[in-house]
Image 1 (cartoon, rainbow, N blue to C red):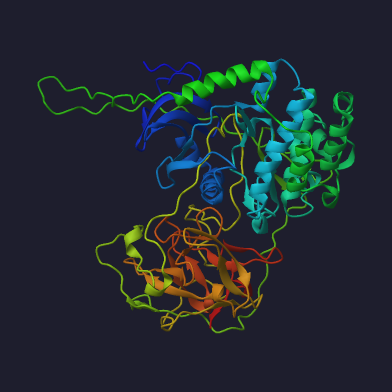
Image 2 (cartoon, one colour):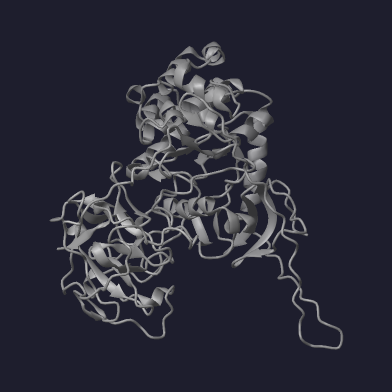
Length: 589
């Protein structure tokens, strides 16, 4: 038995795995309706290992997409913004990832340890540390979108933000699917609650104001229920800041500015850092005595050399030298968040912690049709593609999902190593949470939908003829007139519509053994990927990088038959059911 004292972890239960991937497990840090977080040992250090429940993988495709998107987010974040990634496997069933173990307490746990709200000095420190982390996230044009007490971890050195499961790149943050937004009701901004506009860093600043009010009073400023009442108050009423004003009038003014219903009136995260710095210096011990005592125990645990548990023994059958596999423990189904429609002036919500909810009226912006005014993208499904570096023939020995089946253009200069998947530590502490499934660009593995058999010429069943010429090409959208572009370095990048004359708009094709193609960005060497949100990623890093070129200029994701679409009016690049619309027609230039 490994000593867990001071770690914050509970002993493993009978149904818990003893190893996830290469990581041996020694305890359980948290559990919810969608996943569990374990304490493990990875390469001589403690790790927090987050794994989805098998029932979620089988039944909740939205949450699976959210999990994949969380990996993408964490691959982009600097280590000073959250716990660094150690390992992960998004293709495992169930998928998992591991981050460095954070020897800390959530803000909720800290208030319980202190037996009440934090003192003034600790509140200014909380503001500085949390705003500093958000400033780093916002500098990458990303938005956390779910700042709340359980996602703020206090440490001896300061503070760490966790759980980027519903984070989103700012230019892709308007909706998860058409009419869907996400967050935790008591800490949502008015624009999140009403769906009035896409998410920016201002939603995180609003949530931080609510978190500060909670830390100063023990309750969020608009109430802590998860129903329609709190959302109504966020949109229409003023926050209750009496306890904050009684404690520190100046801090109350800062919190009120963060809670401005007009997002343009809120300070930025960087401005909040400057405001908080004026109340320093902040010297150890940073937190109240009772909080510091528990943090010291966890830090001492983290400093000990981890003891790696031995692999489980396999019993042998009587009279046989062959080992008999240990039967798997019965699967314990996770509690699913139940969808409860509640009519309010602008939204229908679900109960629970982190929510996805539907706006009223629910409309789709993809119902557009019309003739295809542009020449189709054509390529031969049998002939090898060509790139700037020469012929790229499919390897007969590679599988369709292997990273070896893509031959990158020699001119791209992209690395061969897979992209870091990204991970988060203790994000499953809020029970059954219903999170962001990513936007509609994520692949839907339900084969019965999105087959591209709708009206028009977007079925992808037409004859394809000629591969793009040597030297690269652009993909111009017939509806927007913009070209598919990618930004970011090797490993990860955002995709969008942009200037066709820019170098970021140049792509080439690389054939696979299945007869499909990877669409390779010439500058970064990344492949167009629809795993999680639409983005570019290291070729072979995931299973949603194979495309076929269909009739009518369609570009079709092979694993679900959905078409590449420059969606209107959002302007997002995503995959949708093929409908023959101009937004799904791409011409080669």
